[in-house]
Length: 204
Image 1 (cartoon, rainbow, N blue to C red):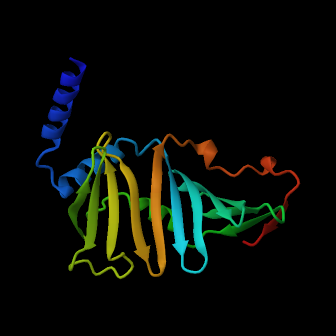
Image 2: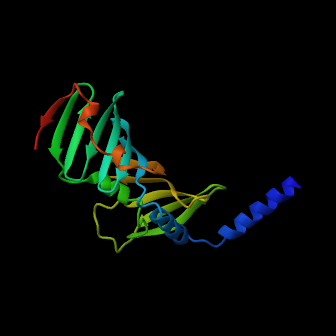
Image 3: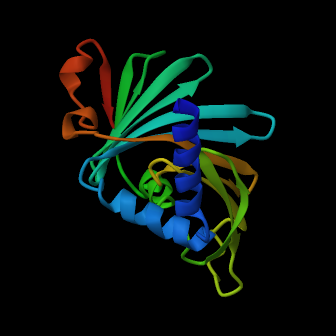
């Protein structure tokens, strides 16, 4: 009986997903992400650089503010930003640099997960029991030279939320993965009391 029920569930699930195009899947993904837009988001970013290897950064994003924890040669550099000011802590020197924010590239990277079909032609390249693998090719009408030529998007069948997004920008391959929701303001706000012995260098 249990085996029969499992078969029926599998059949119903397969039938429910039948006929969905890549565009349908991405549209549903955007809808599901929009439901969480006020919750804050965290995501892991892997940056693979030729000759230098891969650097991993965990980004916590809430509104216009964010915190980045970057693994660099065995230690973690942490940076906070409220959209106007950035604080960067280097544990090797126990120093905090304060500077103005010129361009918030982290926000741009997070925005990559929204409206992914804009300027791209999407197609389903592979499908497993748990995920859809979608290839995004830059449309001929997309004249933005900064947009990558292709992106690889993986979407969860269970939640319709993104599992990962990979793109090559110049010589750097960027992969965004482990997307989670539930970040609050305290997780992205710089608190000098957490670093009582650190030297603060204000470069503003």
